[in-house]
Image (cartoon, rainbow, N blue to C red):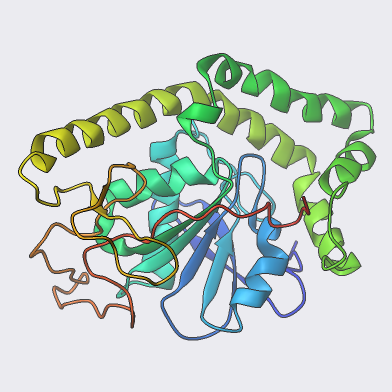
Length: 300
C-alpha cells in the first residue's frame, strides 16, 4: 500500500544491505540536504508541516524508521548503532556526495549525535528540537520506557488506540496544522505496527544511555586534557555569542553536542575519493550549535 506523504511532498523507497525497505519522504531542491529524524514511536509524518516549509529553501528528506509506517520491520534489536546503520544508508542514497544537515526531535537527538560521531564527514550541521539528554532521561525512567510504550499496544487490543492516541497527539496542536496533515500524522503514528516498533525501540533505551554517557565522558576528558594548552581541542569549538555574531576570543564550548565536523586539516571526500563540495556558508570545522524549539506539531 502506498501512503500519501502529505500535500507538496513525495515518497520513495530504498533497499538496505540486508534487503529491508525504508520509505522516505522528500521535497524541495538545492543543498545542503536537510534530513529529519523523528522521536521515539514517531516517523516521517511527524515533520509533515515543518518539512513543507523548509522545502521552500532547500531539498529535504524525512523517513520512517524500520517498522514504522511504510518501512518494513527489522529482526535485529533497535539500538542506536542499528538505527544509525539505516540512517547512513538513507544519507548515502539521497546525498552521496555532500554532507547533510540533520534535524532531530526528542529521542531522535541521541540518534543523530551517534551518527555524527560515527560519520563526521557526512554531517554539515545538526539542529536539536527538544531532544533527549541524559539529564532528562534518568536510568529509572529509561527502564520504564518499554512498559510505557506497551500501553499503546494494549489500547489496540481493545480498539481504543486511535481515538485515545489521536486526542493525545493533537491536544496542543496549533491552527497551522491542517486537517489533512493531522490525518497523515494520525494514520502513521497510531497504527498497531508502529506501537509494537515503539516497544522494540524503547527496549534499547537503557543501553543507549550508557553509550551516550561514555561518549560524553570521553569528550569532556579530551576537553580538559587539550584545553589546558589554550587551543581548540578535537571535540570542542568556539561558542557562538548568539545569532551570527563572532565568538568571543578564546571562549570554548565544552558541550559534547558541539563537535567539530572534521579534525583540522582533514578534507572530506566522496566515495570516489574526490573532495566533497561544502555547503555555502557552512564551516568545514565546526558543527552548528544545538537549537531548542517546540515540538513540530504542538504549541506551548
